Amino acid sequence: MKAVRFHTHGGPEVLKMEDVPDPQIAPNEVLVRVKACALNHLDLWLRKGLPGVKVPLPHIPGCDIAGEVAAVGELCTRIKVGERVVISPGRSCGQCPHCLGGRDNLCPSYQILGGYGLDGGYAELIAVPEVNAISISAGLTPVQAAALPVTFITAWNMLVTLGNIRSGQTVLVMGAASGVGVAGLQIAKLFGANVIAAAGSDDKLAKAKTLGADHGINYHNQAIAHEVKQLTGRRGVDIIFEHVGGDTWKELIPIMAAGGTLVTCGATSGPIAETDIRYLFMRQLRIQGAYMGSKADLLTILPLVAEGKLNPVVDQVLPLSEAAQAHQILEERRQFGKVVLTI
Ligand SMILES: [Zn+2]
Image (cartoon, rainbow, N blue to C red; front, side, top):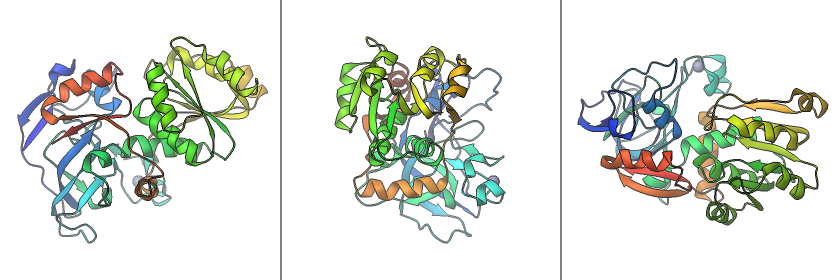
């Protein structure tokens, strides 16, 4: 099959389209002909190389995958050849207390397709356990389906499972134009929250408002702390949906309402942040980490997408052969929503 992979770490130019052996399915696996694969920042980090993390090379990136089932293993009972499916990106043992408790993203053997040590969807074919393949409704194209899993699962985990979001709360969505931000603001609105979107341009904020954001803060020319105080009457926000990290963090802690939660799934602008601990205990704040979400989360999300209550947001679609250009777009943060490769 054709696949895009990299043999060395570096810029987008290390991504090469190559002929590689077709994946073989185990008896409990299905072989999926990939139609679309959405990009995530994880793809970029793995390509660039992470300090202290040795990625087995060559590596095929891509964790958000949709396609059509080409073959099924002999132990598969639910998925049939020809079915259109979206793939749940997390692989886990399926037998430990975390997996059986519905928190498979806490499983000691949890891995993401296209992540460290597992080839992903920048390819014509991928083999995945049957449990990871989920049928999609006729109304959803592979491009739209591929735009869903990582960001919507993560945002659901952050706001619903871990953030305990409730109607009437105020939620500040950082990086609201990013894939996960777009998912977060839609889920926050679905739960009846008042949403403040923060993004780097007025154009992106205008789009965030079309998805339901009540207010926008352009963090290039507005001070987040000042604007949040104005918008909340100095009360602060109940939930901060965070994935930016770095220097921004220390401005966020003081604008949290008493009893508030900051839930983070990333550190795109830097992993080291400063926290004034006095705010934590005086206001009884909670800082919560989130990493992906459960397989069940995607099963909850898909019907909401079918009903039009949540919508995948696709910014650009490029062919697999232009994977390097697609990485460039994400690297320069030119997108609103997802950048998707078609195969
Ligand atoms: Zn497990």
